[in-house]
Amino acid sequence: MDTIADLLTRIRNANLKKKDYVDVPSSKMKQNIVKLLKEEGFIKGYRYIEDNKQGNIRVYLKYGDNKDKAIHSIRRISKSSRRVYTGTGEIPKVKSGIGVLLISTSKGIMTGSKAREEKIGGEIICEIW
Image (cartoon, rainbow, N blue to C red; front, side, top):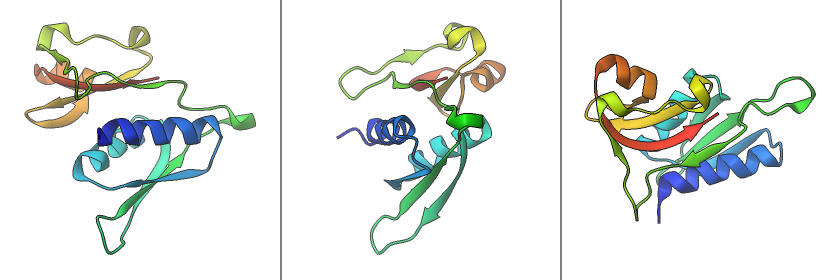
């Protein structure tokens, strides 16, 4: 099972139902992805909740006035059946720079714009706008 796709699907579904938060099973990669979503302003925040297993991440979704969604689309690009890699000069822009691309690089998970600055390519995880 693709755990990153599960994270993105849970966030997408909770966003569609306009929930205040969603809980997802925790991993270091998921924590890094959620941290980047917070830094980019797509979610209000997140919190690690300890249980006697792997723990959970509670993701607090962000809405504007009149419950306008901060996340319009969130889509997994590289899947377990088809990995998508990009070089440093070929990092695509999402919606002409409005959206954010998350890339797994040798220096960790970062946004597409940061990867361009660092001149690093890697595996494209997802796009969000």
